Amino acid sequence: MKEKNLKHFLSPWIKNLPKKNINNLVLDSRKLKPKDIFIAIKGKEKDGHDFILEAISKKVTAVLSEITEKNQHGKINYIHNTPIISFFKLSKQLSKLAERFYYKPSNQLKIIGITGTNGKTTVTQLINQWSELLGNKIATMGTLGNGFYKSLKYTNNTTSSSIDIQSFLSSVLNKVKLVTLEVSSHGLVQDRVKNISFYAAIFTNLTQDHLDYHENMKKYELAKRSLFTDYQVKKIILNANDKYAKNWLKQFSNKYTIAVTIQDDTQKKYSTKWINAIYIKMNGEKTDVKFESSWGKGILSTYLIGKFNIENLLLAMACMLEMNNKLSDLIKTSIQLDPIYGRMQKFNFFKKPICIIDYAHTPDALEKSLNAIKLQYSKKKIWCIFGCGGERDQKKRPLMGKIAEKIANQIVITNDNPRNEDQNKIIKEIVIGCKQKEKIKIIPNRKKAISYVFFQSNINDIIFIAGKGHENYQIIKNQYIYHSDQEIVLNLLGKTT
Image (tube, rainbow, N blue to C red):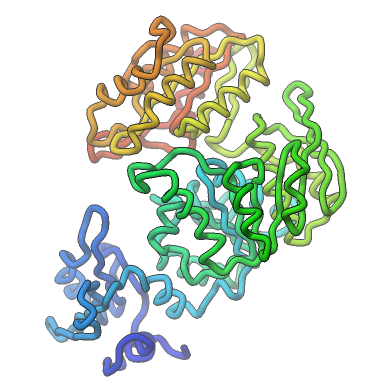
């Protein structure tokens, strides 16, 4: 495509269009500028068709309007000389449209896709950190934001819209060669990453989450698996300790795969390449990981907490090796990798309880995080503060209550993001999973819950604050209210120093 005009841009789909200049493809009517194309599709909460007149008032070149009747495709109506173009199943074609509009940017970049229930952000940010440490500038899109390492712009979704993704990739073409992209199951089902060429795709794990959206684990698995079967992926990196990945590895015998395991050398026979940690040793705050691999053997040292973070570290290392980084350089620099913001983030002050903030909001993540803390600080009392999100998977609430009660010494149940659901109902459903009611205190106000535990705890205790991680808000009703677990913890530490 040599020029950005309406006729040429839409020629693969629709004929007989006027040769009008176009600037951008835009989904949000509030961001429209003259000569843009407004994409009118029905969203989860709002329908783009309700904003067509607003778009026309902003002097757009055209409106693409999603329709469900195939025989109406290509029909053009005019409002104030602005063409309203009917487009059959437009939302399914968005990635293809955006790819054409931005000249297929993924073909000129190495794009790493990272998917899985837990660990996406950690693996993504470890790759970002490691690349920068070794002198390679990197761009990224994900939960912590879009942009460059240490220069991120906040985003609402883990995986942005297909238009935003293609636009972002186009914008970084002259600045980087490498992009990491967190890929959510919602993003896969909604075709947001269609028409992207992935140099590598990484799978972390699959455990219960998002069943309010996917209905059951089988559909959830198929959504995640589709990244490796339905997309252009050159290299597949799997956490082969995960039961789903074990099955996939055998099914992917005709693909280029890397199996990453901890103390399991049975998976390497199914993969093209492999990494297996054979021994993990904790030395105070530091953990040493002895490994063997297709690239050689060695010891990685890290300050990351938990076996699940060792898996994340090894997945990141496999990716770095596939991008032709030297094993010796990775071994040398692994100790310099910082914990990720809001992911097992530790606040350790002299003569104060250790506070750990994490995003754990699934049964599996809560269990693994608490077990990791118990293993690392075996003789210390553990306080666990958590809640569950409203209008999300309700089945996990009693499971998380049961897990917290089983591992932690004291539990305070509080609000997460209740949204439009009754906070007391959410808390009651968590408590259903608990038997030892004497271990549990309910304080709905999250700030008060954290403060209560801080002042009740002793200096040798561990305070684990789960669920919010990096988020700096709470969603109560339809309002985003400022809230930062980190800020509250730092203020409490400052008040008592």
